[in-house]
Image (cartoon, rainbow, N blue to C red; front, side, top):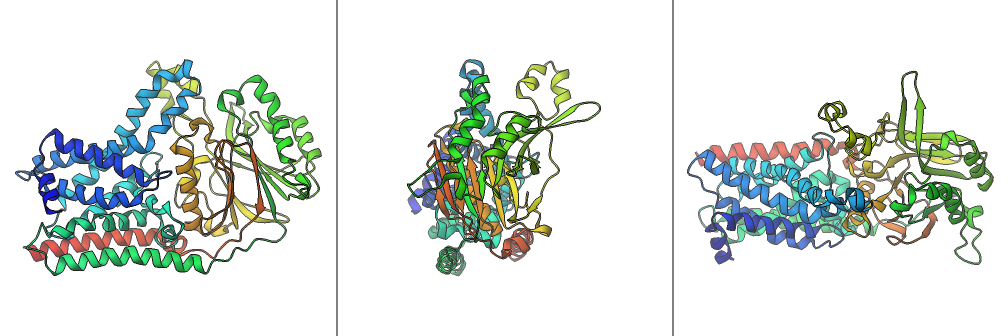
Length: 529
């Protein structure tokens, strides 16, 4: 191991950047669907040694070297982990296919700046000896938090998400959340770098202490998860029988004139599927859940469609379906990406409007600026939804109160749930059909599982092409459909858990970890001087 460390320390120029790029790409394999999270025990120690080898002749030289390492590391990570986003432009390849290679490079290049910031910050705070892995954990956790919040935020494939590879290791999200897991994960994964004893005076007591801390944290995570799942019952909520419809309608068919005309009947037919001789189909279901924009028209403006839905629903059955919603004002019409709740009389009982919109997917930031720059065609191509009011708990007779999160709203910790009026379950509707059989749908499901664990709430997930699932409050899929299968997912609603430690104190715990790191840094610097 010492020979490997010396080899990394002596790398220079493009060889350092190439190694950083390779480490980033390898680290992305810790995420779904590969879930090879042990690779991080290799990549992060090598990153520590790359930072150790950054020239320290001056602050500028040091930061320039750290920036290069961090940016190439991030570029490799996000290229390998997020390449699938550009596949959305292949749905209409004859029109937008030319953008695919550009988007494939631009998105990783942009997110790489967060990791460049992290490595620069870590280099500024770098300590001799084992304390340097604490500084790396601090810097990476802060950078990942910023990535999840700056502008509209995109907390996808956070380092802490690697713990989602196993139901057992994921349970710590109920204590510290995915940002807290990012801090602890970097600390744990970097610890093997201390085995060489470099960076301080020999292999002393400090190395043994920090290696022991890392081992205790990892074993503690496994022990806590095992104990938590060991006491978990497979209970269900009486009287709530769910059916999720996954039609797997391809994007290039969905928005055609024929696709719009056939959509409602397709969903109604699937909703009444008999999965066995004893299955009564729709008659035995209390709740039907259809995916995001299942109905590609303004449902509230289509009384015939509402009447048809009402006729199909048995007494007491509710339908939750995604469909656009329009609200007219004196000056303009607002459009929303919404979920309607419809009763068996065909009446709209409630609705939720998506609040966290996808930039350049559902709206155009700085729309006026694009028009002035002569890029009005781009804004018209994308169109635009208005932002909904935000977190909302829906309470209806005969149904446990629930929250609705549309598409990637589920990936944001601390958002979309009204903790002052806590729901008993979460409905997540999405349409991952843009991304086909790529990494994207698997990563989206993993993030959904982590939200269930953080919140202590079951999630009922309807995805157009998959992966639809009924997920309990421990993040375990009770029932799920394969990706791109035409299927229905039947099951009972799992119960909610009491608010988790993360729900009660999650933000405070995360910021306390960062504050403790700074206190540790100040104390260490004082001792060194």
